[in-house]
Amino acid sequence: MQMMHAVVVDHPGAPDVLSYREVPCPALKPGWSLVRVHGFGINHSEVFTRQGLSPSVEFPRILGIEVVGEVAATTAPDQFTTGQTVISIMGEMGRAFDGSYAEYVLLPNEQLYPITTDLSWAELATLPETGYTAYGALRGLRLQPQDHVLIRGGSSGVGMMAAKLAHALQPGIRVTSTTRHADKAATLQEQGADQVLTGELTHLPAVATFDKILDLIGPKTAKDSLQHLTPGGIVSSTGELGGQWAFDAFEPIGDIPNNRYLTSFSSGEVEPQLLQELVDLVTEKHVDIHPTKVFTLREVAQAHAEIESRQGWGKYVVVIEA
Image (cartoon, rainbow, N blue to C red; front, side, top):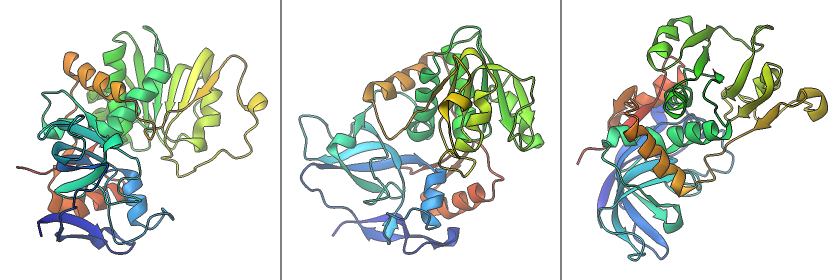
């Protein structure tokens, strides 16, 4: 039996329940392909699952909702070739079945997306969940050349990626990002924000108005965001960094001012051409997508601890060397 290293959660708990050990390599089965994992990002949703906050997830489980790697073996040779670079996101990976916190992951064929790229594994690992979410949400905002864009939750991985991609999509726009931590303001400006608002900011300053708002805090602040749009403006409520999953007593006529718009973007609905568009945009516009920090597979528990402490910022990735 072929063995591999993986990070397994036997039961919910603190970061130390993430156990690095040898387990059997998944066996190929009809309709699925085996992917050799080269990298993946660490996501807040995986922290929530590890804590036991995802009721549908049964343990033991190998977490990991995204992956970049190469096809190792496939049941669809007409679609994939051995050694082909692929990305996969969501689709119950790391939830209903074992995910990417391992040297190999077995995935449904319909959940594999071939990618053509010269990016490094560390760079590519920043894109599946974080980059795709930021890019998809920004496309939904229908950016115009002179827009003033607000990113609420700007020091998150998606927020920092969105600031960079927004400038790549429309070089003439102005980006304002928010963060609760004043000591992160300079970093956000280095990463693409033209202006930074600091503090809790559950409610924005009364005089503040924006053409487009990417609200990564989510339902906790989205109703407030709608009140700060210019006519024709759009809010994309994408994410739940505020820890609230649904609107409280949302009443569209009262909560959406005239001629303003509310939308969202879910990375669970994957459009393969958007993934390649994203990779091409990053390459052609020379967008700096280097991760904030790179870990080894053995260090996944450390990455979780840093994210959970809220002291981390940006995108943490794991790279598995050949």
